[in-house]
Length: 355
Image (cartoon, rainbow, N blue to C red):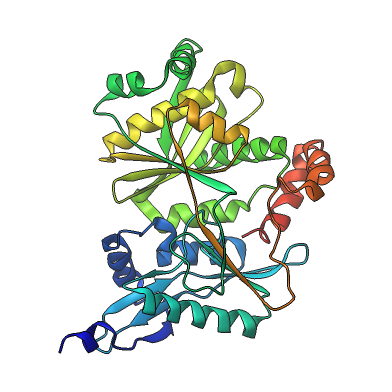
């Protein structure tokens, strides 16, 4: 007698930016697969900060209870094509649902939207594959998550010996650390981050994206900046959600490496996050086989494969936005040589299309 209740149909609708945020946040927080990138406020911040369209979907039972959500960003780019992405500009996302039937229904609705908007691919970053219409990639990206230690001393002791030595060296380089979201914090972060990604050969995201995310998350986001002689040398914008800190956009400038500023930054963030009642540190994703992945392993983090699911229109190839693709080698090398003012002028226009 109870079986029909478990499989009763759901209705799919677009999320209401004003009326649904709190209900969606409660659903995401209560779901084992929920991440901050599933929140409606993330999708709205991305739309505001990058000018890409929000297409957030909600599945509801007949009694009005949320049965699933699917954050979607419609990413249009002259260079990279048009794709529907979950979650746009996030490292996680995908369908979050009560069961496989709801998941498939949401994914089917998203595919219809992709067709209506002229998007040739639907990208789901995380979760389970909704159907066999999707190709799943578990080889490209790794996720790095570990528990935080009980106190500062235990946190230092938990770092493997060689990396712990680098952190200790940073204590003697005259670095100071601040946290906040004031205009000075935002300006310092953008200056450092923009130089960092230029040096890696990738375009910087719009300043408006960082501002929109900070404004949307309020006390659940901040910037930690490392300075030397008063000048910012490393900085990271982090999210705090459900007991986990997510250092999301971080980097250091040319002065950071000899000062061990990045080592100081992440160790300070671990201790700062604990003071904010966090118990886990999510070091984010890195591509398998890269220096970034090796750096995180040096801290004692084990990389776990991330599942990304892509569905493409018949005859269409998936978007290629992976900087490790050999086709981008010359462009990346050229970008590294750009004067920083030019990279900061052109970069935000290009990066809006990466999603």
